[in-house]
Amino acid sequence: MININLLPIKQIKQRIRVRNELLALLGALALILIIMGLTAYSQSREITKIDQKTAVLQAEKNKYRAIVSQINHIKKEQERLNYKLKAIETLNNNAHLPVRIMDAVARLTPSNRMWLNSLQLNSNTLALQGTALDNATIAQYMERLKASPFFHKPQLQNSSLIRMANKKLKKFSLLMTLNKP
Image 1 (cartoon, one colour):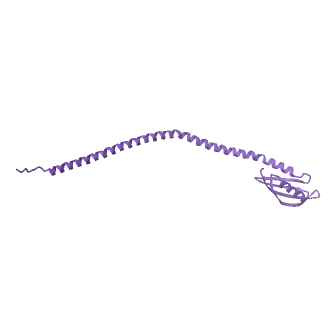
Image 2 (cartoon, rainbow, N blue to C red):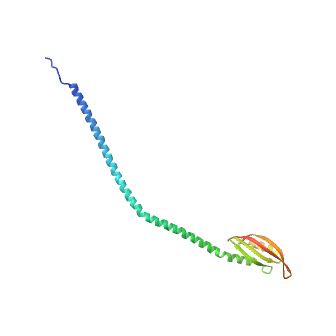
Image 3 (cartoon, rainbow, N blue to C red):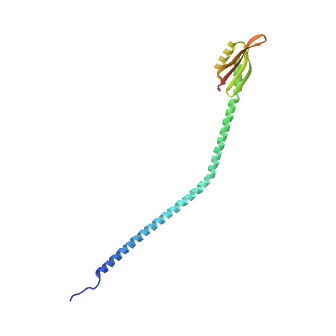
């Protein structure tokens, strides 16, 4: 007798293969979802740790902000005081300058041949006016002034002849710049 197999074996094998492929696909999909979930959880924990560190560092920064502002205030105050000290030092250095200039002029002026009528000091310029016995005395005086460490390039502005007590004298004016030794 002939046995006829009426069971759809090919269809059953195909269903089993499709079911196995579907299970493998679902398994792979579940594995991918688990890996993604673990990665998201790990990253959220890292984000939480970084946020906590940021909060701690921000609090520490806020704590030091007052100290930094005090340091900046102290630096500004120090700069202001240094400026004042430099101004005081400049004033102290320049306070004795007019006295020293007057002393140098007095020492260099030959009292028996010349006398000074006026002396004007403007910043670093000195103007002298006086009377001398002759032009040679004025020239010698200018050479003495030039040799002094206080005066630079004395220039004769004018010289004129005047009569005083029946004597012919020379009235002159000099202009020179000052050296601050």
